Image (cartoon, rainbow, N blue to C red; front, side, top):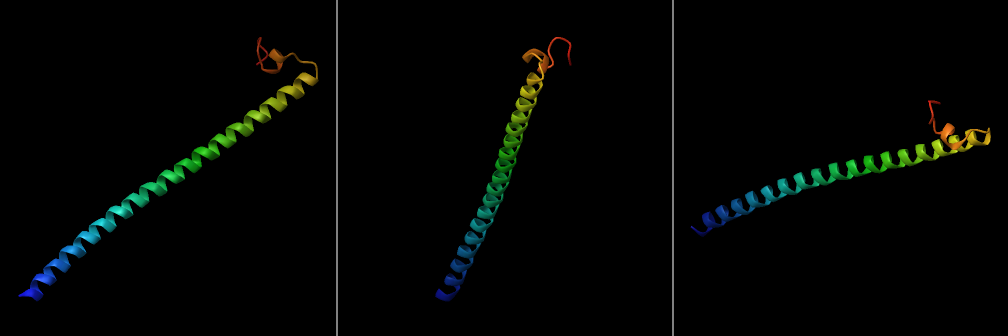
Length: 79
């Protein structure tokens, strides 16, 4: 019957749709993990930049007390 054929076609379409939905959900999960990792990487880079600035400020402060640049960097056995 036509009705049976339509029911089968409807079931096939629903199966295809559900498969596509699962695929999209997996992709979305991957995208979310990628964004989270990129955010962590950005924060890590910001922390490194901040610490680099702090080290430079400390080095300049040490040099203002009369240390040479090499001494302020801990070179020549001053470590």
